[in-house]
Image (cartoon, rainbow, N blue to C red; front, side):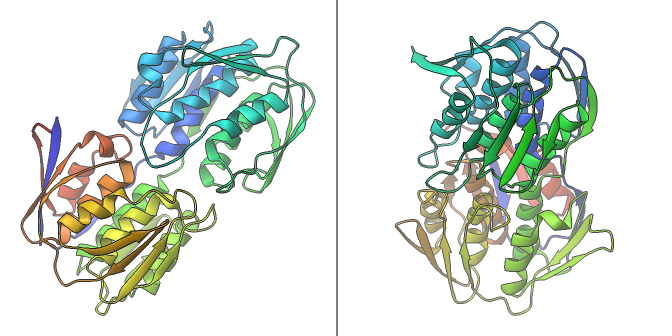
Length: 425
């Protein structure tokens, strides 16, 4: 099993390119099931989550070709059963439900796996599909979905306990594009990844209005065609490396292939904490430099356009050595603080209670063997290791490989001293 050794104390410099968005790629790949014509998708990151999704599409009968970040998919003859042995590895595999039931009138999808970061129910996914006419049952760990009389457009409210559901919005959006009549999604997720999926579907011939707002309207069509699409940049990867610059770069690091409008949450908090963030004129490149007098601040996660829950772990790592007191509240996944125990092993002063972490910044972290518990927690441990004294050994590296393309190579490109080795956990 791979592990990453991070030798702390080196100042970062230079530039890297940010990969295509993992969270946008997954539903877009699933949406290829909606047409029997070829779709071409560029800048699909080479991470384990996208690899699993392509394996699922192949198992469903798609012809899949991949090379240099470009994926070609033809779903001419497909099956409605998504296999457990692949689906169990990734929660986002649930987004094949919508396109399968829309295209074939039925689907059988195993209840999926993925990161264990608290309660992540799929009830809103099922609620949305039921609202437009799908019958749903469970049997032997599988979700069985049928629309014997076809799907019919309806107004559907997807509001949930912790805010809108991104994948639930994706699922209903994909099902609705081939549904008779008009479907209106109220309390829809507004994330850029939802907008990217909508743009992909529109390029296939779908009729969608309002993506990026809380109300999306879809006029169903009888069929969709092939298309060529480029995935948006990964705003979470970009935010993670922005934090790396704030933690460990006295001269600044530059991130290319980004979108300024998708990084407002990270930008505002880095600036508030005293670090330097400078975008170029076109907003597709940013340079981040460690501030001379950083200070702690407070963060509360919220649905887009608020501060993303996928960035709170990385900021917690930064605050661990930021003077003063910082407070991080996660309103979306209140249990998503497993990284704090590992940071404490490195000497961090963090207390967690009821979905809130209070961080007292210290001068220096000490390297220690640590365990990655989920995708973003593993990124936080890498960031902490950049600043720690000694060599931090990060185990269970497969978590970070789910969503960061060649993170060790990019860190090396910026001058970090890291190495991937084989080890046992």
